[in-house]
Image (cartoon, rainbow, N blue to C red; front, side, top):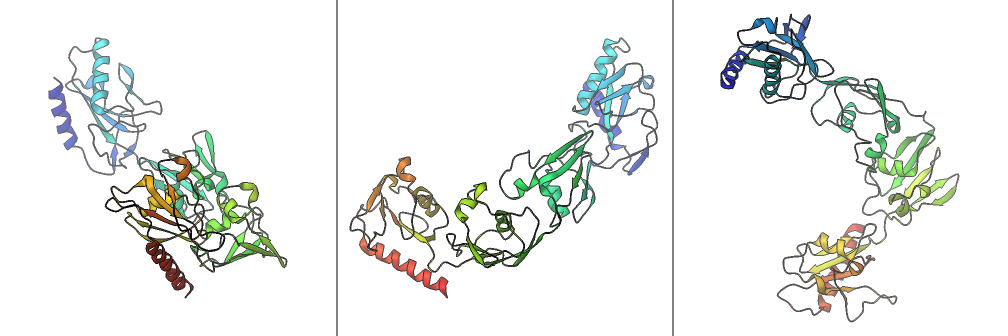
Length: 402
């Protein structure tokens, strides 16, 4: 029985017209746009507002014209048997539900029912407000706010902290700025979108003035930036991509009304809000270039030897992981040297066991040298290797200064 109506269903499906609009008649009323392609008409779940073609084989009395629109509560209304919940189910399951209703109501003893997704309106969202590209967009499964918003190109003064998503009678307020600044990636600040969502982006506060940013930043194409009354230093640094590898993080400063204001960059970069600085019109931000780049060196049983830039806080564990220990490298016998107060390296290295959290958390300083003993060699710390590593650091420093 099941096989017979399944074959009939496929035959009917193959005979369906491929036009964009069809006269639905029956209970749908008017014309039905066949907008979005149904990828798998047999297994794909039925959605709200789909147009279904229902056939009780040999019994047209129970389907009328045979086409029904799925209501907002996920049901269709069939002659004689009333409402049947179909949304979220495949067409085969929906057919089974209708058969059960026909049997339990003693309408038919052995009904054969075929259900097809005949029409599907494309799911859409709309975007309006302080964006470059306004209007409707087709919504695909798994689409988040960021996917739509970035394509729409928010205006420079768009208020990204107060994005509104109108969803039915509800209004969702989203602080999208947290997602854009990399502070939060949860669904709260970058939600999944639903069919019919209306996204509105307000214009932020009027421009209060402009600031200049000079020196070692990643994006040097924005030397002058407009600010509003609430613009913070961290926001401007985010716009220019942060400091470059040659930026002196300890000596960033702002010139304001002829006065020099020191910037606690490391604390601001780590997210300490009360250390951030509110900017004013005509502020000038300076990021000096490092006279000698801060570096550390890892060599021995690693895949990538040589000096590495010391940017921010780096532990010895992170440094070794960056260099990539080779198989069999002795992580328990890492040798470590640090230049002393007299500017010289000690005669004997310090032993570090990377499997001990307290030792692995050692924070590196400029000039630190790490050797990972290789499996085939002894643990003797070769002074010639140290001098070679230091020489490499000096050579790279001289290249950077040029």
